[in-house]
Each structure stands twice: as structure tokens, then as C-alpha cells.
Image (cartoon, rainbow, N blue to C red):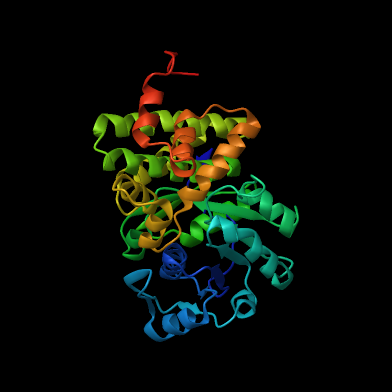
Length: 346
């Protein structure tokens, strides 16, 4: 269930800083949005050379050019400095780096600190969702949340109207984060379904690679919309098997994020698929994009989790086979189109 920001819920005061860990395009955009909403914000990235440039330029020229830092946004010189006296911490790193960063920050956290993330994807080695990894590393008592939904960093950095979802089993934490990041140009909704929001964020990246492949091969609009709608069925099927609420997948973090990443070339996952369709090898395409393409590793993780749970996901399986077994995308489409006829609704 989703609701709007709740003004009556307690949250850190205006003088309490928020720490954002991860200074890529999305981490920078979220830090700017928190600061733009009037909250002192500390941004930290692992690369000391990048931190110096961010401090000097008051802009992330490499990952988010043109988005000038608000006065309330400061760059932390070290991880311990970023975490000092903060109540809320937001982790914004790729899924493969998520556990390692949590392990690094765990001994530095205040006992009352709450941890959120905008990381998307199953952990490759274990098949765990981010909130399960966080529970292992940080303990079950610490409030946790995930931020997800149909958002591109460039548009958030530019202050364009945006909506997203904040999900947490802790309603107070979800409402506080939603309120703290919301402004006249940015609206956050809350949800208690952290499983559904995380599954949506993982699977949509795989499907966006498939959408790029299909469009790059000239399959047309009919194919793209079939991939999106049947992909949504697969996403929902896996989420429900893992304990998610079905209605979550018709919201911002499900259908909204899926449509966005499958149809707009700001999506790195979609661009990755387009490059593959143009004849690039996967590693060559990854180098050309130059930033994390979550859908590449997510295809392996989703394939493994679906097999573990006994969930049928033929589109995601076909994308996996194209990426990791060299099966031509045209053969995947042919195989999907010649599957036995069945009812549309499971």
C-alpha cells in the first residue's frame, strides 16, 4: 500500500545532516534533491580525486554535468566525516558493491542511525535482496528503507517534476524520508512492501536490456509493448513468490519504472541492449557506456533466483541466454512466439 508524505511523523530536524554515500549520477542527484528540499546533506564518494573535484567545482561534471550543488550540500572528505552526527544514511552504490560498503560503515554508525538505499538488484553470489543483505550486516533492529521508482538522475538534478516510492517495514522511517526528499518539484510516496519495490527495481533492469535489443534489431513497437506487458507479468510472478504484494507492481516502482527504463535512451540498460544489437560484445558495450549497467549482472541473478523459486520467466531467461550463452536475440523472440498458447492471466 502506498500513501503520500505524512507531515505529522517525526523526522530529523532541519539542522540534522543526511549522509549520501555514493557520488555517481544517481547518488549526486539524490543528494542535490535532499539539499534542495532544505536539509543539510553530506555527499561522499570512494574516489579521493573525485571528492576533491566535487568540492572545488560544486558540480559533478563527470556524472551529472550542469547540476550545481545547493548551498546545503557539502562533500565529506572521509566516510567517518559523512556519518558524524547523522540520523539518516542513504547508500547509492551498484548492487555488487552494496554489502562491502555496509560492512565498512557498520562500525561507524550511531546506534540510532537509520539506513536507506537506492541500490537495485539481487546480490549475485547469494540471490538475496538488498534488505536481506542489510539485515545480515546491520542487524534486524536497525530501521531500513529503499528508494525506487521511475526516475532518471539527469532530470532529478535539473529539478524536473518527479515521483518515486520509499518502502520500509518501518512506517515512521518511510514517511520521514518521503517528507525530507519531497519538494514542489519532487513527490515521494510511501510503501510497506520493501520486497515488491526491490524486486521491481531488479527485474526492470533486465527487461530494459531486452527492450534495447528488440528496438536495436528493428522488431518494432508491437514487440516492445509485448515485452513490457509480459515482462510485468514475470516481475509480478517472481515478486509474489518472494512474498511481495501484487498491487505494488502496478505502481511507481513496478510498472512506472519498467516503462521508463524500457522506452527512454537515458536508461543505461536500454542503451546496453541497443549496443548489443549493433554488434558489440557485452564487455565492449559496458566499456562504451562507462557506468554501471545493472541489468547485465541482474540477468544472471534473476535467472538463478527464478530457478531457485521455481518461477517461470521466459523473457528474462531469453535475455540471460543472449547475454551469457550467446543465443541470438532473434532466436529468443522466435522461441517466445512459438511457446504453447495459454491464458494471459495466471
